[in-house]
Image (cartoon, rainbow, N blue to C red; front, top):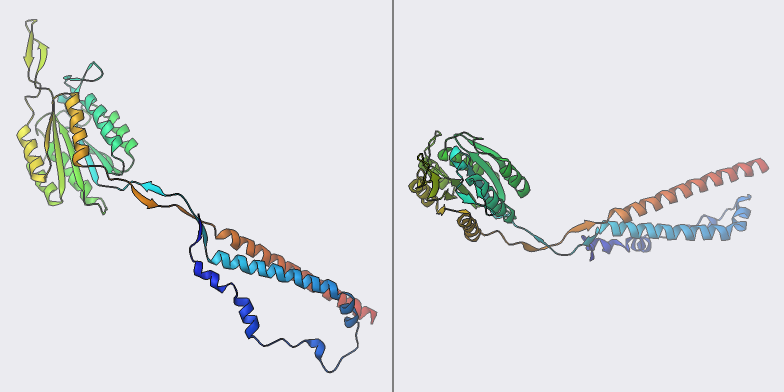
Length: 344
């Protein structure tokens, strides 16, 4: 659809005709009382029809240039079809545990045994791909906490860097408090008008490293209005070989501090989830999609492309052409005067 950004500028279109009607008429030099004999009159009589045609032609050029200039001033534009634009709903940080215990192979993925981190990558990757419109960041923590990806709308990059993470990258121990504090700092420093601040923290152990107590870190998160959803990952039992050659059942999640993770979530208005297998982890992330829904796209946005430069350029070309023709006319008249002087 074509439109004008400033349609009221079209009102100045008849301005030259209005000025011409209001201005006093120009006195014709041929009406002078005293006439001096010269060859100029004969030249005008001979070329009168050509001159009138030339003036008429120039007048049309001037009119077209003026119309183009007014149209350019009205800023013609083409309005495209309505587009759905995803609204950024929240700042969402993911904190993933890379401590040594995440190497326990008590999860299944595609009918094969995998470690906890591999299962987390697969499920969290799907979750990330669904979070269109959210600014997502990634924190990897073990003995220390690192910001792997700052808050960004580039979900593909977040997913890629999560897949590249490996166990032990940040140390063998678990610094839950430091991970929460880092998330609070990065979200608090982010300049954004979004009031939604969310941290999803996944771990399989207890806080065994770091300088900040997890509960104190949760209190800091509460102060800036950040909700924390904690996920405790790990099976409750697993069959392993015993020293005597037999099989025995063990609890691979004996070190999981569910009390602390529950307290962290409750302090900040979030929830604690327990993922005992891959299906359970998938259900948790789907539930998080429901609790923290992706912002619906907003309709009504139409791309606008301006085309004022085309009529403006055409008016400029016509003006330059008229100036060149006027200059050539002056040169021809100057030559005629020289020939007239020589003949006289």
